[in-house]
Image 1 (tube, rainbow, N blue to C red):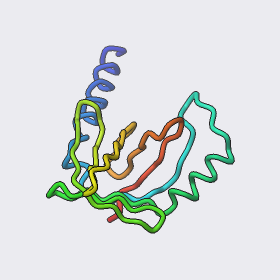
Image 2 (image 1 turned 135 degrees about the vertical axis):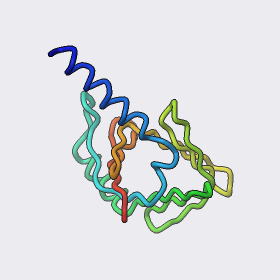
Image 3 (image 1 turned 30 degrees about the vertical axis):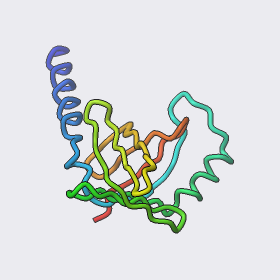
Image 4 (image 1 turned 90 degrees about the vertical axis):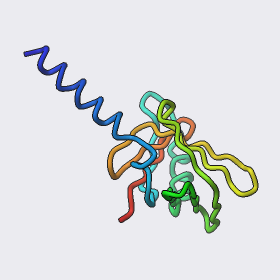
Length: 126
């Protein structure tokens, strides 16, 4: 019985991990929430301030390699690439500025993005 459970867990985790590809990131992702990483201490006032700052965050990944990051009333367009091994997306703006997006957790309609001691949750917009 234990072997069966372990096998099912391994298959399930493998299926989730393999589902995270560049194509799976395509679309528009909107800010949902922010929370402290497990085991990390983040001042509640800092989380509240970050929540207000990211409230209008939108990330759009397009098939043609174009990405748009929108936050605090500003849009920044650029090219994006995805590293499946590192689970990171890199967006390089037209001015050459690179933004690294570390994906801590991926689900079909939700991603948890690493931001220091906190995780930003974004959800797919339809």
